Amino acid sequence: MYINNFREQILIEPIRNGADRLCIVSGYATPSMATWHIQALNEQNITPININLIVGMCVTEGLSWISHKGFLDVIETYNSIPNYSLFNCQYIYKGAPVHAKLYLWLKNNTPFKAFTGSPNYTQTAFSPRQRELLTDCDPDIAYTFFNDVEKNTIYCTNNDVEECIRLTNSRSILEDDGEVFAPNLENSVKLLLLSRDGEVGRRSGLNWGQRDGREPNQAYIPLPAEVARSGFFPTNRQHFFVITDDGKSLVLRVEQQNNKAITTPENNSRIGEYFRRRLGIANGMPVWKADLQRYGRTDVTFCKIDEEHYYMDFSVQSK
Image (cartoon, rainbow, N blue to C red; front, side, top):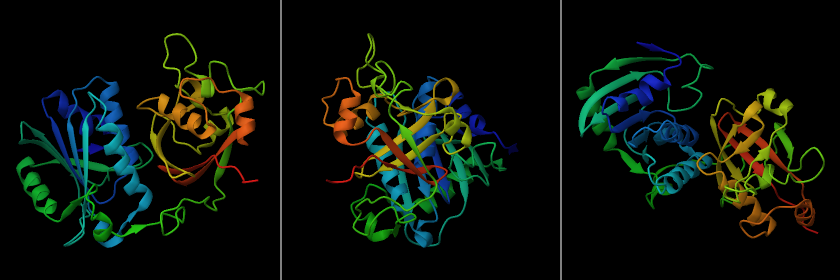
C-alpha cells in the first residue's frame, strides 16, 4: 500500500524494471500533470515510454476548453521532441462515466504491474498537499478493465471530439466562439519584465540567452521573492498550463535559485520566442526597454484559474 508522496513508485520506478507503457484511467486529469511526468522522465535520463491516458468523467461532466487545449498542446509539443515519451489522451464519451483511478504498466505488451486507489492524474493528487492512497492490484484484471472502458472513448485529437464531448468555458475565460478575453478574476498578479535598475537585463529575463554558448531566444519572466513565497504560483518544479490573451498556450514552471524565474521547461527558448513575436522583434535579437515601451507594456499579468491553469495577459489598449 502506498500513502502520499508516491510519484516515484507509481509513475517512474516500474520503468527501471523494464516497463515501457503506462495505461492510465482517471476520472479527472490535467495537461500540466502530463507535461510534468514527461519532463521528469527526460530530466532523469529515463528511457522514453508510451503514456496512454483515458479521462473518465467527460461523458457526464464535460471537460473545460482550457484542459482540452492543453492535452492537444502536450501531444503537439512533446510528441515532436526526440527522446521524449509519447503521450496520447482519450475521453470517455458514451456509456457510464468512469470515476476509477488505475495505473497499469505493460512490459513488451504484457501486463506487468498495476495500482489502483484514490489519486487522479493531477499534480495536486500526486503531491504532499493532498492525502491519497494507492495499492497494488492484479495486472491482468486491470488490463481487461482498461480495454473494456477504452471501447467507449474518443481520442482528443479526433475531428469530431467537440460533437461528442461538452467543452465548458472554464470560469468564463473564453467566449462561446473560442475567442479569448480578459477574465474578471480578482486573483491576479502583475510581473515586471524589467530588472531592478528599470531596464531589461542584458543577460537575464527576456535576454537570458544573450550570452556565449546559449540559444539566444532563451528567456524567463522574473518572479519577485514576495510573489514566489505567496503561493500564487506552484513551486517545487511543478508545471502549470497557461492560455494567453492572444489564444496561444504555454506550459510554464517556476525554477532557478529562490524560485526567481518562470520558464517553459521543455525549451526555454519557447517563452523568449513568444515575447519576441508579440514585440515584433526577430528571433535571436536582444530585447530592450524601448521595445517594450514601443509595444505599450513593460509587465505581464497572470490570473489564476485554479491550481494548474492560468491566464496570461500581455495585451495593450488600442489607441
